[in-house]
Image (cartoon, rainbow, N blue to C red; front, side):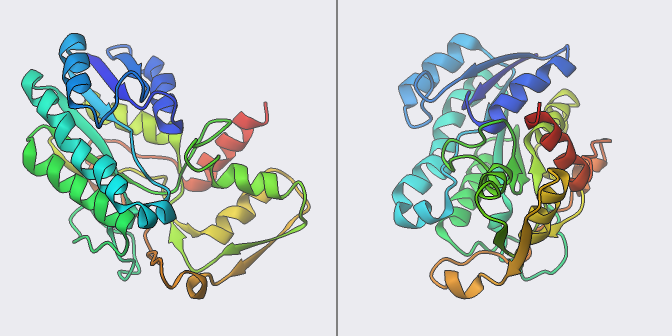
Length: 288
């Protein structure tokens, strides 16, 4: 099966390409934003019709939350309307379409991990744009897989948009500070890109039905707890201090509890490792 990945150099796209070696039945081709721009309808049609993939994975996103508030037009263009552009091309060749969404489609009021069947209620432009993207994918094409995930980190450089990732940022800060304040009012399911990639490719290989799937490392924690485990695994003498950031982000609402449950993927035998085990693998990989 030929799989086309959009967003070649991102931390998730890189993990997908690297994980492909574990799936001998899958042939991976990747394109960066210059070769395949999701906002360019003509280019999308030309590349997809030339490559004729059996599955298309869209990892492109505008996901820096504060920037989405400042640039709502771009957020909706990339996270929502580009999905329709992609599907115009994908539908013609009847390929499986995979796109990624976020825990930020929820308002965080549930206080327990969200299921695929829970009703979204996004609080900010980022979450709204991703939710609209979900709806376009699911209602415009019946071979769409929408994968919601949470707190993704991976690679030695992380995300270009975010200038790294949470793990790398904590490790960098720890080089110059022996006390780091981190939010303890937000509960998440931090997810290693390599585990997310493996699970995504497994969904494709198993030819699961279309719909929404949650893929995150098992369990959940606060960002402060996550930071503490990073420091612990890196064996650094740094104090992590949990703080409530809610008062600092009145104008930008974030869900306080947005952990996800991988309910549907488990039905197909797809189980991601616990977040602590995943973090250990990542710390080991970047320490080499």
